[in-house]
Image (cartoon, rainbow, N blue to C red):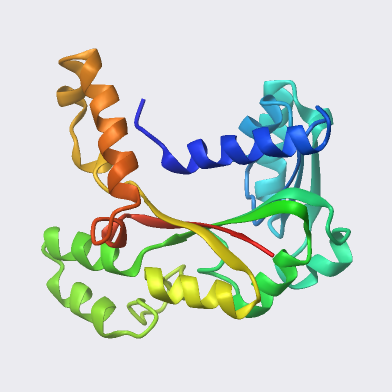
Length: 241
């Protein structure tokens, strides 16, 4: 199994939330949660999860996956956009709010973050996971797509500017930190996800059980160490009021 520094941080948040709630199930809000990539495992772990997602097809897949995992009663699915979050979710109602892969596609990230922040319960946290602009530049260059790499580097929000591109923007560490700070949130952690783990072949990990542990430790350290953090595939932030 590849190391996942994001899940490690979220697990710690959920332990703290359960303690705050006297052993009751942590309340998780997953905005733009799609088909339940995060929601279903969190429900399996005992969380009460609300997913806000605009796509009916994604919600149908979520319902199927939740049923197959036996956690349908722990997941509440709400069809809607992040723009209407205030009408869909009670304020200060979630111990952990997930915005994973969301800020790249919304019309106004600052407005979305303000709405997300309003749903975080006292003591809770907002978890943001975004595509890293500079990692994408390197990936395009390594694959020989040099024109694309230059376009991504030149564009102020890290997009190709071509029709059909699904992302409206990508982020770098300082831009993400500033965006979160502008909403009044305090950035408690800013780390990379998949700094080195995606570069290591499966064959290298199969040679020794110790290799998996060594990779996990290397990934953990690299995730928080600039400049390695700054070229991770994705950037992950934990922020609070």
